[in-house]
Image 1 (cartoon, rainbow, N blue to C red):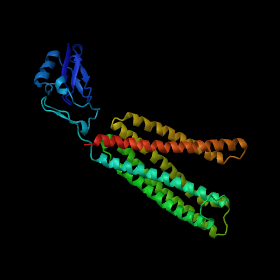
Image 2: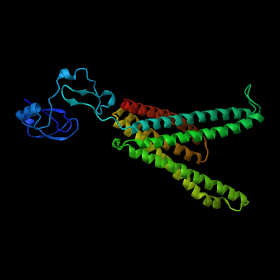
Image 3: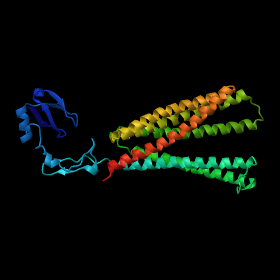
Image 4: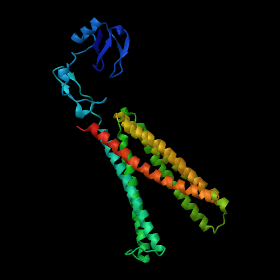
Length: 341
């Protein structure tokens, strides 16, 4: 005969064999430690609720038509069984999740904007290069107008990229509204700190580089290459630090996406985020290898390998970008689905 009783913490009905009576067990819902009662006292607890604080278990007829829920059972599928005296409603997710959803939308929009601006600039530069080589396409503007147009487009492109970057920064900061119980908040706060650090360090490195170029030019070449490299070493170090901060920013943000999807029970998207990180590290390694190959003395074998790897890196970058956009979209959809009233 089975012992049936309620968990005093979550009111989950627990049914165990009689042989397990007076032994320790855990609630299948909340994991609370339970002492399994004797069969008689268990039945008494079910009926009177005196020993375990239980209320009568609802029958199968009372469950009829009730929606099935995942482990978190959010607001769109909550209900109250008044006849059985049970309140099956779970706490509604924090309003901060709506801010996170908006932030992810801004982040995704900024990424898409950067992609479109980059494609536009590449296309225009390709057309302008064809014009400069004397292969002007039919109907294209002349060289005089093309130079001015290229400069104007470059300015517009830089402004657009800065605007998209601000969208990404604002969106990432809004993700800091993630509730702490998700265990993902620390990742996004760390990613924001790294992102701000990347921008500050990179701008400082550019300032030092510009100051060094102007200083060396004004001295009429008084410094040789070795002295110039020593003077530029702080700027190069800052550029390396900015790259490392940027890498940490991206890794932490992907870990944040993984944590959010795990919290909402979307384990498929969480695993996809993990696979994305593996692919991202492979991409970074391949990129560094190509950079090293560019410094190797040229020979046909090295040139061929460099071309193949460069094409592979470009393809991997496109795949990672599309993968990231999908992760952002799926994460936002999971949040919106869980917080929908």
